[in-house]
Length: 321
Image 1 (spheres, rainbow, N blue to C red):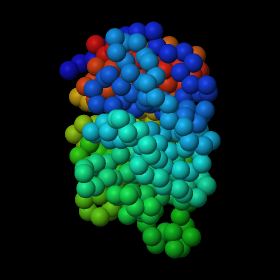
Image 2 (cartoon, rainbow, N blue to C red):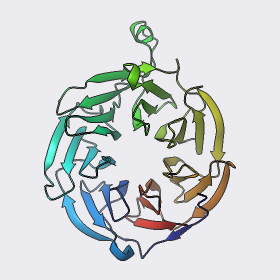
Image 3 (tube, one colour):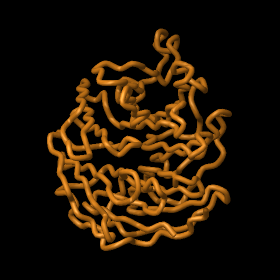
C-alpha cells in the first residue's frame, strides 16, 4: 500500500471544544473517534457520511486532557489530565468511569493501552517528574511495574538526571514499551523480560522534549516527535538512529504510523500536518488546514482516515488515498 495523498473528508468541525484540543484517538474502523481538550472534557464523535457529530461528552477531567487512547476492542478509553488523574471509561452503552488512578501532582502525563482481555487490562502511564513509566494491570491503584529511564545504580549514586517523562507507547505486539522525556531521552523496555531496559542510556539523537512515540506495525522500528523540529526513526533492537526527518518549522508534537506501515504523519506547532513515506524517507504532502499548533494526529485502524486536532479548536478528518 502506498498512500500518496490526504484529502479533507467532509467539512471538519470548527469549535469542536470550547478550548484547544490536545488529543485524538479512533475507535476500531473509521466511524467513531474521541477528542480531549483543555476545556476539561472528552467528546465521542461519529463520522457517518463524513459529517462529524458529537454523540457524548465526558466531564470530570480537571485542568485539561493531555492524552487519550482507545483499547483494541473499542469498548474502553483511557485519558490523563493535568490534575495527574488517569481515567478508564466506557465507550459503548455504559459510559461510566471504570477505573480511576489518582497520582501526585506532576506525576502523570501521557497514557497508552496495552493488552485488554476479560481478565487483564494493561495501561502505561508516563511518570512525569518521577523519571519513570508505570504499568498498571487490572483494577489496581498501584503500578505493577515501575520502569526507570536510568539504571538503579545511577539513581543511587545521584548521577541520574531529572527527567520529566512526557509520552509512552506500546509496541503492536505488546512486548515492548517506549517512553520519551523532556531532556530528549528515549527509553525502550522489554516487558516480556520483566521490564528490562533494552539500551543503556536510551536511544540517542534528541536533546529537546520528546512529545510522542509510535512503533511501526512489525514492532521493529520506532518513530519519535521532538521539539527539535525533527521526527527520528530508530531500529528498536539495534538501538540505532536510522534517519531524522526535517521539514517542520517548529516543534513536532505528535507522530502517527499508518496501520500498514508504509507512511506516517506528523503534527506540529507550525500548524502543519505532514505525510511521509518510510521506504523512501521522503515528504509526501503538507496539509495546512489548521490555523494554530496541531497537538495530535491519528490514523484510523483501517487506515482509511487521519484525524488531527489543535489549539484552533478544530477537529479535521482526512481520507487517505
